[in-house]
Length: 512
Image: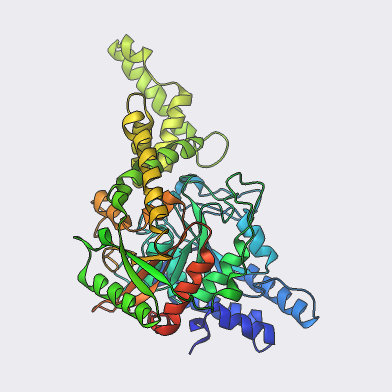
């Protein structure tokens, strides 16, 4: 087995024993990036020199028996949505193409303290708005299992990097499924923690009440190790939960006795691909063979989840993205061109004697705002800003946004009721395996429906995890989603690891 096909947990054992050096490991992944990323497009930037320098420092400290961090020497990729001091952080948007944050996000600081080696920043849907990583302003990311297909999104770059063996670990963000969905489509493990479990300080916001940062790995053990490193209270994030962080990496291999697994009847209706349903039901049988009991449950308000999400998330986005106006930071339109256009419009109106037109002619400032946002944002971001602005506008707030908040409360209550009967909820992560690139780009509604099984966890604030549970006839990964009550990530990891140890779906690797 090639070094880049091994898990982060296996790498860490080699690093800690001295059998493996961080420089050797880091160079292996950098070589892999050079070999395959020109076809996959997972990375927006790669810091080879910085990574090797960092790896060398960690090797020297280990050799001198000095203290090293929890992830010491492990290469890691970061979604290009987390601020890193001095590093261009684009959110895959032209709006932030030259933005260099003056500070580190809390997650970046924790990873730095843990001595992780940052190899690069991964592609994503612009401002995390999308489910295919086709909405990036810079490039399209492809699924390593089939380069004609999407890796999912918005954290498609991070998922593809791990699936293609270009990084053993990666960081993503999940607002409506943006970690779990690409994990499922790329055949890796991805996990969205409880809202507030991981600090959002330094995360460039999409929808602040939904966004969460989480891990990607080749195995459940990898995801547990990475979450343990980045979780914890942060006073700089007012939504951060001041609760202890369990030692996930120590407890992950403990099987759960008398495990009660719920399956949601609403998740097995029309629209679910037969191969996906077959793989998920086979996973249920694996759990039964491990002593778990299966229970049919209902989440009656889940049918409203996508509609609820696509009112709340765009509404929050329209507010969060209002700051990108070309004044303080980020992209600004060409002012000479803009002023020339304004002068030309004025001359045209004066020649025509159009006094009303002159009175309503935009000022230079208003025109600068309008052109900056029109040029800086891509089509999907503009679509969601308009949706959110409409939902929040006078006369529509009660009909849309307020109603969505009420439904959100009911969705959360459905989960509370269900977890009174079962320990975990299991089911599909996507309606079908990976779709072809461009297949849904002309149909936003069809793209939004890809999130049908994932958005509820964000609305309810509960943790969710995706791990591979099968392959389609075309050889594409199929993912199993597990969900647990709030702050029960430990239970989630243990339940997922039980399945992983009983099967070999995590052993498969994309062939590039």
